Image (cartoon, rainbow, N blue to C red; front, side, top):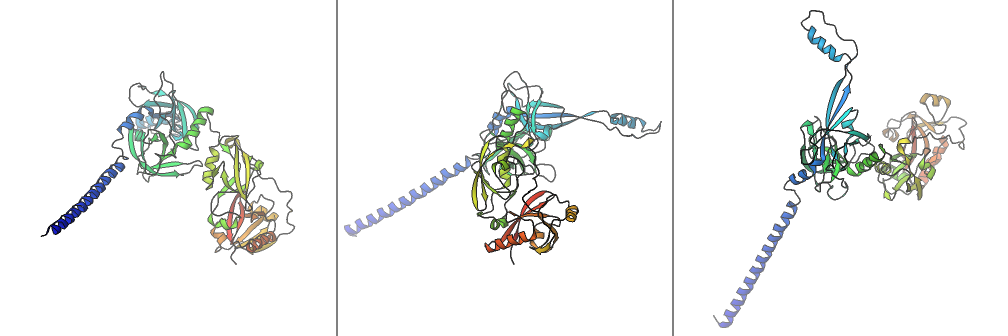
Length: 499
């Protein structure tokens, strides 16, 4: 082999070695990247909850309530003298002869201030004559049971505030932000409480879902798979920073035991309620003064300027803050206090959490245009819905007329129909018949319902409704929005205008 060939062979060998080295380096770099990336996820999973539990446990309490239950006072059975069951039934009769007895219940709670304010569920202490607090064993904590006094309750959110007196500051925990980092779906959480009367207990899981609603008007529950059982009620749900992001309240279960579907009222709701109970001993929620319903997809085409099914559709405006601000039936509330409104539930919760007397900017969609209003909120607890006054400007129909349209047989109001269907309004069209195969029937309309508006305009006669239908069709609309009242309760229904 010539020197030139040898040199070329050496160059090729060096090139091959360089490529091999480069591939090896890339492989090692990739392996290192994987090795470094894997612990990144593992670090987010806590190796133990022991440190967190040890830190917050002094602030978690067991709650025992005692209630006096009256004995039976009705006629008692008579056992013949000398009967072998005489002593047994006499003892039973003595216990039931109107003599009071005590019933006990157990729950959980947590301390939120060094001077002894405690949060729990209303249903834990409701009707209790005596409430006793037991602290988690620890240095500096009360060793004896402490008697608690009731500060205030809010059945709407199932929250109660108690107070205990002690000769030194108590360990306490703080509320966190239930909408912030650490409260996302999938984040770790820890529940503490007194499940099934077994004493202090810890369970852990994740946030399974958020913004759950059960039955209450102001519901905003965090769903978790951390084990929650009877007795856990009123206990705290912690994020990994040791902040309370929820109050354990309910479980969903076919057998009464935990199946991994538990609910904790979110701290964003609880903080506001607790603050009011501490300050006033009662809640003072904002009141807008409207009746509302959700906007459904079939209503979108029937409402000028509405692009999608969002907002809160106003069905009634009794005397109150909204009426004073100029709001009217048929308005769609799209923005409240700078917050875009998706549905009625969101609006109710935001209004309820707003201070009484606050001046709030509200944007409504009316006849295709946005209207900006300023509403001074009233107080929900002391405000009553007021019946609408009769509209003196609307002429009463001179003669009854019946006609069928949109799957409905309609009549103007007559004395006979007023009596038959207990109609309280003086104007509108009465549904006196309905096609069971029609869209109107499928949407729940029934005989006796009263149509008072069509296309967000009042209707007094059948001719008025015909005009509204014609106007909607001429405008290219596919449906017509009707305001229907049943027993005084209003709701909007959109019916198709298909020929």
